[in-house]
Image (tube, rainbow, N blue to C red; front, side, top):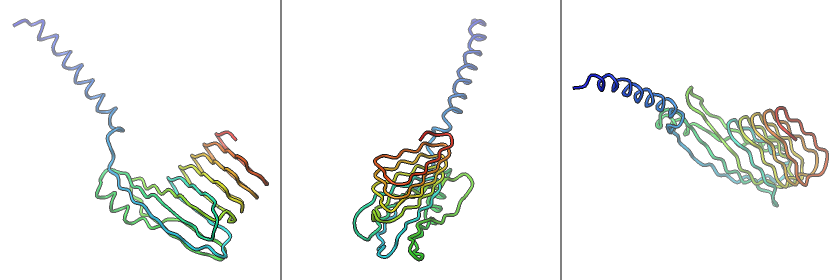
Length: 196
C-alpha cells in the first residue's frame, strides 16, 4: 500500500463530491416543477354590446378582430408548483368569469392562490372589429389586430403589439416595448424601461 496514493485520493474524492454538490444546486431550477393545464372555450353573442374588457395576471392576451356579432374566447389555464395533485386541485378552482354589463362584455377569472404555486391564465379572443378592446395584464404580453373600435392596453413586464388599429388607441407598459403597425387615429403610447 502506498500512502501517497491514499492521501491523493482524498482530495480527488472531495473535489468530485464538491462538483456533484454544485451541479445538484445548479440543476435545482431545471428540475421539472409539477404542473397542470386545462383549456376553456366559449362563444358569446355580443349583439348590442360595444366593448370587451379582459383582465389577467401571469398571462398573455391576444385579440383579433373579425366580422359578425360573436366573441370566441379560448383560454389556457396553468398551475405550476411543488406537488402535482395540489396543482390539479388549484386548477379545478380557476373559474373564468364572463359577464355582460350594460354595453360591455367583461372577461376575468377567479382563482385561489397558494404560496409556492403559480397560476397563469392566457386569453385568445376573436371579437367583432367594431368593438373597443380594453386589455390589462401583469407578467404578459398584449397583441391586438384588426380592431376598429379603439383599444386601451396596459401591462407590466410585457410588450404591446398593435396591428391595423383604427380609432383611439392607448398603450402603456412598464418593462416592455410598444409597437404599432398600419394603425390610424389618435395614438397614445407610454413605455417605462422599453422602446416605442
